Length: 325
Image 1 (cartoon, one colour):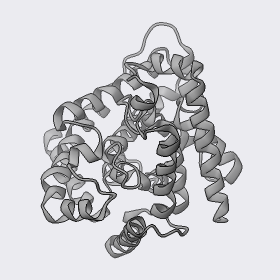
Image 2 (tube, helix red, strand yellow):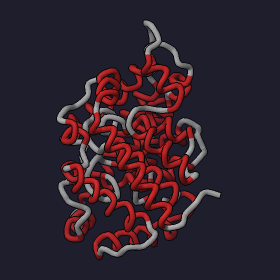
Image 3 (cartoon, rainbow, N blue to C red):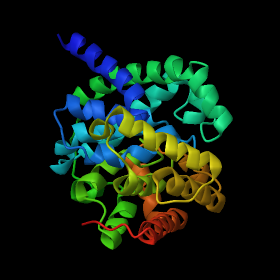
Image 4 (cartoon, one colour):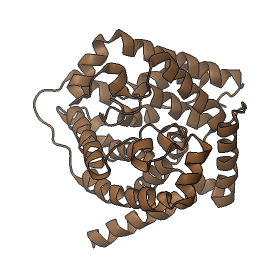
């Protein structure tokens, strides 16, 4: 019976990718439903994670959406503050991202898909040569099957409670959560719930060394402002802003719309810090949560990056006069 359910959820994720037009939302939304979580705010927030971050080709949305689902599945464990659960969560995230890289060659969208979806020629190649089916639809199905296994596997604890356990129980991880907390304080957009889920993006998304976690936190905040929930909007309601956003992306238009705000933000970050990827910026890949915590405590560069992401994202949200009710 479990195998039949898993195959059904996997097939559902494949279909949703084609209707949602968003790999991160299709992955997380499907698995949240599998867990019985109907609250859709996090699905909306995950909108700009598609295409490796607003179509910029960094960490695949099946990776980021999958990591968020793992955190959601084990959130109760982490909130309890039990010794060892924090490190076990980071290890579970790394287990998934390592599996994904070994299975599909890379966790990065541009490498896994073989195209640059931030360029119109690359996007056409992606759509009309069948890569959307042979790669993305195929990969999301296999990934969801693996994710269900990891989500159902209990986290092992033990030992003495650490600062890492306390940190995750109190308010989320070390990269994305601080950025989101700052944006929430200044604009009203955000929640402690989302900040806890954003632990998934630490260390370049599940310690994979990909999309910078601070940058990912800013994108989740953008998603709350300009993102959409495909289940609520329907196929046409999803397609229209998707096309509009990509026209803005390829034409370089500026307006209060997700791709028109988020993609230039990503490119500005890359110009300032040299890369979108954590491993390039820090010069390392983190093997565990403890190593990440020690680095973040000491790194002036990462502190600068978090502050820049918070300040710039807040500036962009406020510039468009978007405030929470």
